[in-house]
Length: 177
Image (cartoon, rainbow, N blue to C red; front, side, top):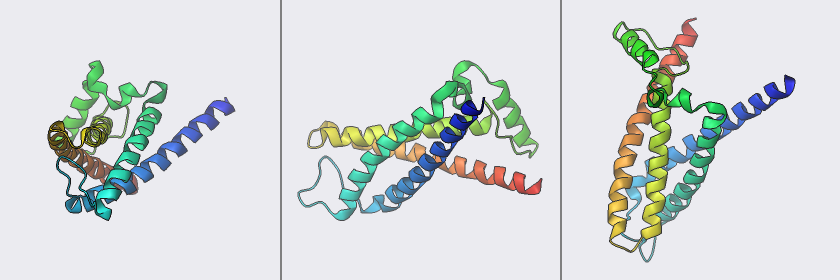
């Protein structure tokens, strides 16, 4: 029993470390992206912004895959994607509560869990489309992958914003108790 608890604590600690690293990487990549001039290929003389975007973006893919595996371990897939398993009751309940100005609980299968799941999917999509652009750089397909990358970044920003709002709401709720 103590061994199981210790393993759970290690997993939670690892999730927090990965989460913090992802926050740092995403803030950097999003904040510096206006200075990244990539279209169909890496320019002959790439700037430091281009190099850091390519290197940190690739590192973000590796960290995202690791973070996803850690988050989804031990059957947690249902936690982040309740709707994929036909579990709509907690979502409906949380949405109805929002209409009554009640902050949803941070529980299995609710609105906050679904937001985290969609954020995780969008993060994977951004990382994969970015690496695919790098893979096909210099070809006609690179422009298509760049467009997909930009669109998935837009979705990521939306879900990231919702995640931040949900976290703030949860924190405020904890402070009130």
